[in-house]
Image 1 (cartoon, rainbow, N blue to C red):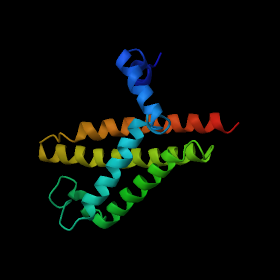
Image 2 (spheres, rainbow, N blue to C red):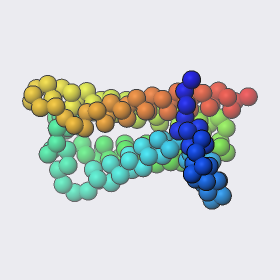
Image 3 (cartoon, rainbow, N blue to C red):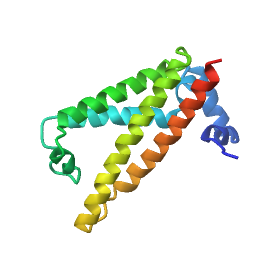
Image 4 (spheres, rainbow, N blue to C red):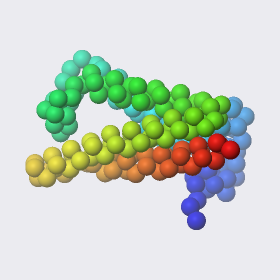
Length: 163
């Protein structure tokens, strides 16, 4: 049986106090069950800001293959910014938009999984060619897995709420 972090938190006295506090400020309904989705959404917005700054962010990294494939930093910044913003809106409006909010979350998680997987493939190829493994690769693989789980959860939520 899968035990969620929220269930583990409920098992401790400190956890019960934390949950009570989050509920008292109204934050629980927006973030306790979807914390990973919130973190990834904010991370996407931060990546968008970083790529939008002047400079050659991608040219100095192992992800320079993206530039060689024809993608620009501006295009990637726009993509990350739009998907991150839509995810934040979908997460915030999730309860009010039934089942559309959950469907928006599922689509954004699917887009995120594809992006993280593509970046992981590029870093894997670069690691093979250069003979030096990238320490970012496990992070991208974990993000991909987390996004697939978030996508599954959102699809489940959409099906449950459509009735």
